[in-house]
Length: 98
Image 1: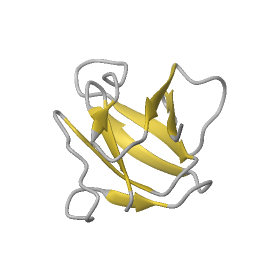
Image 2: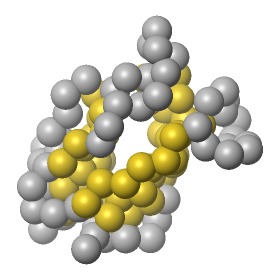
Image 3: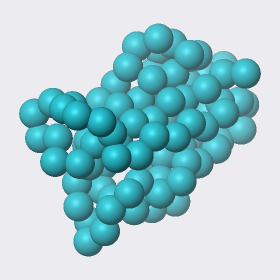
Image 4: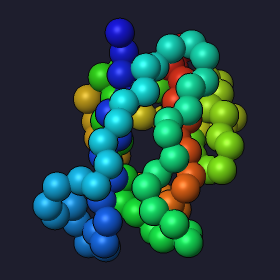
């Protein structure tokens, strides 16, 4: 099963130091799937590391839907981690790239 691994860090302005405050996974398939909400409150910014073991599209927001045609989401290559800034409370959505 293809998987998107998500790690969330607090106060990570320049890099990812220490243990993540939240770790979760999402199964990647041909249908958009959402994560749990990113930890925190009051629109705090978090640093999130995304790692997928398959090619996919990833997007985030208050109720995101990833599309496999690239119309909604950032393309990610398998085994190529990405680090993004995301607002606490937002969700991450992923779909397999076809």
